[in-house]
Structures are given as C-alpha cells and as structure tokens.
Length: 166
Image (cartoon, rainbow, N blue to C red; front, side, top):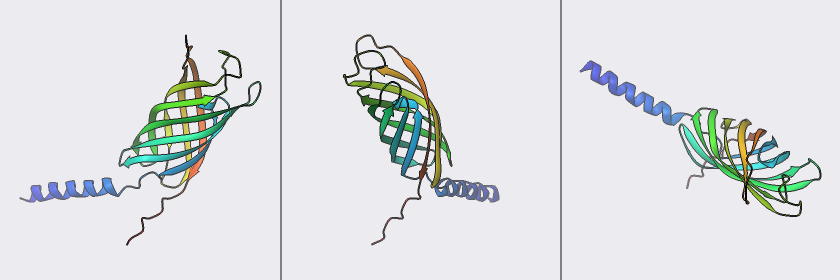
C-alpha cells in the first residue's frame, strides 16, 4: 500500500509543478536586424495560445530596407514555439508585403514574400526577449527564386496583468 501512496503523491506533485511553472508573457515588442524585412524592423507580438511546454504567437511589424533606397515593408507571421521555462525552439511561417523588388521587378511594384522559418527564442514571463532564426524567402510570382536569410531580434516583455476578480 505504501508504494502506491508514494506513486500517487509523486504523480500529483509532478502535475502540480508542471502547471505551476511561469508561462511566457502574452505581449512583446522587439527590434530585428535582417530577417524577413531584409534590413531593420520593429515588431509587436501577441501569444494567441499558451500552455506549459508550447505557445502559438502572431506578429505584425514595420520594416525598412536600407539597401539602395529606403523601402518600407509590413512583416507578419505566425510561429509555434516548443520548450520549457524561457528557452523555445521556434518554427512557423513569416511573410512580408512591400514595394521591395529583390531584383525581380521594378521598385514600384508591390511584392509579397512567404518565409518559412526555424530558430531559437528566449521568451521569459517578463524582461529581455531574444530570437535568432533562419528563413528562406519565397516570392509570390512566376519563376520564384528561393533566397536564404537569417535574422536576429532583441526586445522586451512585461509581466501580464492579473485578471480582475469580480
């Protein structure tokens, strides 16, 4: 009887500890170099679903390519993050809309690029957020050429507000 009681106590303790871990903050703001906007961008991110061990995140930003002439873009996407505490493996689909040509069309045309990504994310409940990822640009056009890229992002998050009790 004693081993059974010990096993039940151990199971209850592990379940309690799993659900008691601090989840990543729901909102973050970051500055990104390279990546889906090619040069620099700022992003606002919102976690849509979070559970112990994983979360789903949507992002929206404003980017600026500074290569030959300043060209704005609107980077956005959805990522899936798997991990524990502050460290997560990140994968997802990013995209960018803007008058950027990548040499495919004249600079006055609006282009849309998909960018599947894989990377590492440090995302605590509050404080410093860091992300590094690798991606491949896939333009939506005839005869698309795949363009490999990488990005690094630094930002911050604050602890979520406690829900108000009635």
